[in-house]
Length: 395
Image 1 (cartoon, helix red, strand yellow):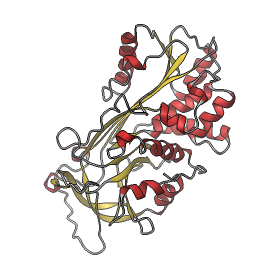
Image 2 (cartoon, rainbow, N blue to C red; image 1 turned 30 degrees about the horizontal axis):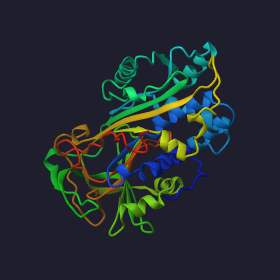
Image 3 (tube, rainbow, N blue to C red; image 1 turned 30 degrees about the vertical axis):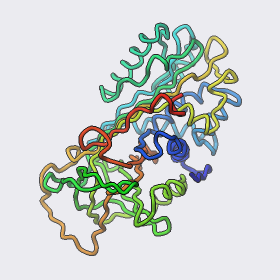
Image 4 (cartoon, rainbow, N blue to C red; image 1 turned 180 degrees about the horizontal axis):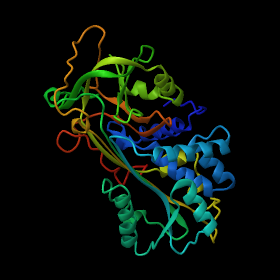
């Protein structure tokens, strides 16, 4: 994947950096991908606050903080607080933080500073026995996400005293503003990259949404609005003979930024598949590949603890996303019927595509991923399972 590391939007830097690593993983080469750049950013920003020296610089680079670091810190804190505000029809639940063995003590001043800036801190649990620590962390995640996410760690993820566990989890459900009516929801074929076309359920509607057609890259960029008028589902759909791999190779923060800037409100006839996604990742491999080497070994430099030798032992993420007609505004046929004419843009996501859940108010992707097969999972829903234990991203 071609990346442009310098950009004014660090959120897109991190998003594209992580995606570049996930798409190269052997177990996700031909499968669906889902992850949360925002959840990763929150725990990495917490890590950056504790890190010093070369370790801190590496974390800053992974975060995409290429401008003034102090300015980036303050922007991130404002961004995080803006995301916490209640929004109509949107439910975002997250559980982000660092975990330590309770025998590793954190200074009171450090604990309070972290909680003030990030709304969380370095939490403590007894790492022995492992099973008890797993239950404690999983219960915390379950409660913070209102039961949407559970089982983020296993006993093998509980590390030794002196190592930290980075936990980030996020679930998203939202009411789309498009008038998706039951009478217009029907199964149809989704053309996979291998030519097979399984039948899956699609949502169909005609209404106003954001759209941009990039002839140069052969892609239609569709922005389905949510009811809060600030969140969008951005779908990047290859056209014609353009394969999904070509889109991935050209993907960069600047290219996504250009698409977002050029999108305009259009009358669009949309056909979009129902989705129900979950994924679990160990981010260590991806973060190491993005330059965060020291944080995971004995060279790490962290402040605020009562002992030395502190470093990251695990970096776990679990995310969930549901896109379904039942979450839409209209559950009956819309009162206004649109006559499809030449002025109406037809857009069908009936082939592999990339997507983001984009908060345009703060300019950050809450979630990002790829759909290769909506029939892969329970029923008609897409379900991206946990990474297998032999995945290079899992260890």
